Image 1 (cartoon, rainbow, N blue to C red):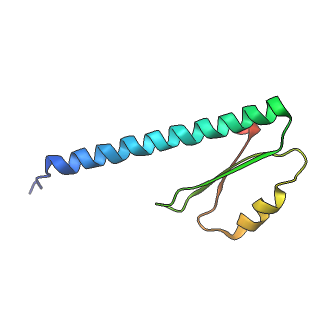
Image 2: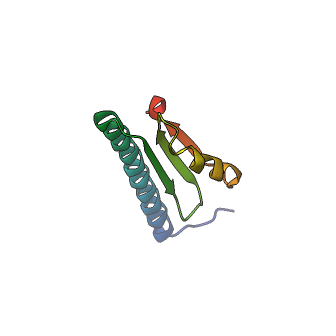
Length: 90
């Protein structure tokens, strides 16, 4: 038996998908800008983003002096496990 879906459900789903894609592009752009800033200004950078909806944490670190290392150790027991990115990942 086929289940009929309304057009509204399909539209809402594609709007959520577009919003998620936009969010992911902005996250990637923000991390790339942080990397560029760290290189241009010779600065230690740590960026943390938590998505409220899912609880996922995304971390970017360009930290040659380990100034921000204490933050990573505090997030070690966090669930869901944070996604770590470094300058080599960009």
